[in-house]
Length: 256
Image 1 (cartoon, rainbow, N blue to C red):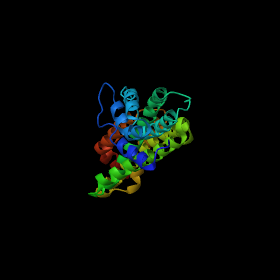
Image 2 (cartoon, rainbow, N blue to C red; image 1 turned 45 degrees about the horizontal axis):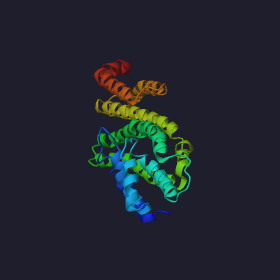
Image 3 (cartoon, rainbow, N blue to C red; image 1 turned 45 degrees about the vertical axis):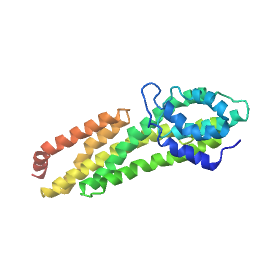
């Protein structure tokens, strides 16, 4: 029995509440079962549903933006099991196999790369005094995860166990690295922008502000060595503070 589109849409919307019942014992386990429950009710009779439901009440945890990819594949496996087809791997084993890698990739891509990048871009609008900056940040940050939630769920349902190719085909680990590097570049550009504004305020020659790019280039080189995003943020803040403390004296000597 194939699930209807209406049922799959119902499951997808419930996945938005995946962490609504998060707890330290099962983490996302109960939320994952709640999301899949409309589909399970369509596939199994009431007496079977109790047994199937108990299998989902254990531990489960992955990145919430990649959880729809897992859920879509699990729905396909449940269809096959309800049709009494032989499964290449059990549903519990599949969930356990993909949960940790998806969590690691999701943390690096979305929270370690995309979030600082969106924040850095939003800072440019904040520096210009635009009141819509918080909404701009929310739009920039949530647009990409929404695409992943939608496309991941559809891909997982159509590919089933072979949905693990989603990570490899789209080179998500590489994108995580590139996104972190882009965040560093944006923060460096924002720092140079602040220095340029400061120079204009003090009526100094603007080309001197290009010197502020030197420490940012060095930070970019450090980023390629695998340093954490938190450390890069701290180093960027230190550079900005030092520039603001000593910039007037340094540029005064250069102008003379």
